[in-house]
Image 1 (cartoon, rainbow, N blue to C red):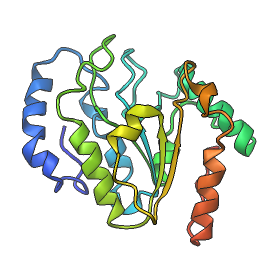
Image 2: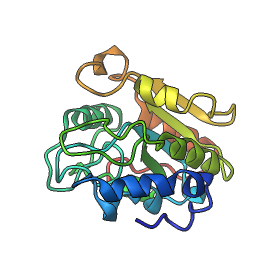
Image 3: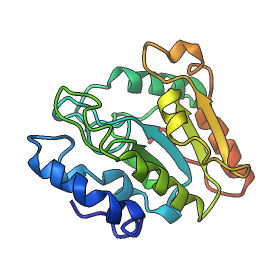
Image 4: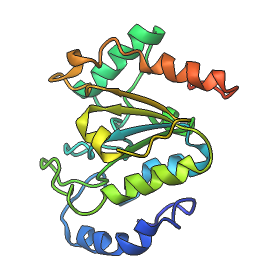
Length: 212
C-alpha cells in the first residue's frame, strides 16, 4: 500500500494516510485490496490528467472493484450505472468498450478517482468518513497545476466533493448520476464524451478514445 511516487508529496499522505493505513490493517477483507488501492493514481500521474471523473467508493461486491471509479474487472458483468454510461457513450459516439474495465481510459489521462478508496464487502460507504475525500480534492488541485482539465461530475456527491475547484479555463460538465434512479433526469442525452473531445481538440490536445 505504497502511494504512487508521482502523488506521494500530497499533504494527505503525510497528514491523513498513516491513520487510514492503520485502520485498514485492522479491517477484515476490505475492497479493492492492497494491490489496487491506489490504482487510479498509479495509472494516471498528475501531469497526464486531462479529464476528471469522480465516483463515490469501490463496488462492495468481492471481485468487482478494480480501483478505478465506475470500473470493474474485465470478466465481470456491467453494473447498472456502467451499463447506462456505455448506453450514453453509444448514443454519443456510436460504440463503447467491450468490457467494463476502464483502464484504457485511465491510461489516456482520465482520472477515475473515488472519494473513498476503500469499502467493506456488502457495506457501501462504510469508510466514507475516514478522511479519504481530502485526497480527492488534493489530487485534482495537483493535476490542475499542469493543464486545464475537463470535469465530468455525475450526481450531487461528485459535484459537492469538488465544489469550488473547477476554474474558468477548465471544462465543467455536471449532470444527474448514471444510476437507474436518476439517469433519465439529465444524464441521458448529455453527450459528455463528444463535448470533452471537442474541448480538447479545440486546444490542439489529443481526444480521448472512449471506445477502447
